[in-house]
Image 1: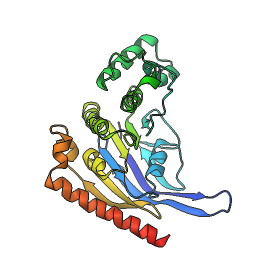
Image 2: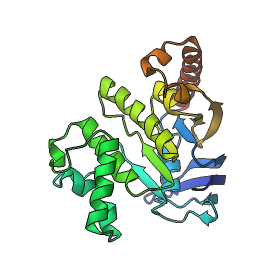
Image 3: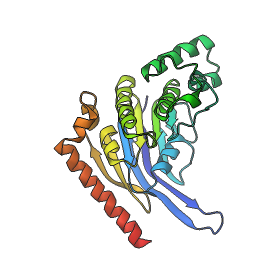
Image 4: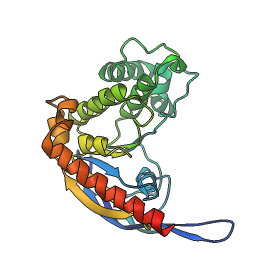
Length: 265
């Protein structure tokens, strides 16, 4: 595992129709140490997903450097795993066939694949569901499959783009607890993009609030709620005065950004 370094990163898009230029991100700088848990939030259009897609290697920056350890990120790689909002699963395949897809692409022997799949299905709470067609699962269970599929490939960095956004409140809270448990058990570096301020506070050891036009890191927080969530109920943590204070501060910050965007539209 290695540190992720983002130096003077910028991304500009040019519309193919009229040539209009959109500055999506500008001068993004941070170092994420191995094993750190980072959440990123901000108003719509601030470039959260663009940043995640560059780290994943789906997009190449127009300026700046993005490195993981000694290697420049220039495309997708097995050292970075992605969990999407809708899971992006092959719903016609069984749970096991979804989870071991990457292992099959790497020609891992069948006996080893089975051991790894059984291990991770047990860890994410899906033991016994390996032969179940994926389309029969609930949304929360499908996201557990997506997590297992990512983790079974043993990436250094796990990237999550609104992974819990489509879930109901109770399932979402259970999945938040699962992510915290996996973070500690695996020691993986995790980056989570979310629109939920509460979720960003609960799942962010570090938290970036981004500002739009162009996207940039407006403020960084270093928080203890994620560590507390390993020992306490997330519901209890949300009732704490310290949690409420930071939540309201960030909500006001983002509200003001949205008002500025609307006013300038």
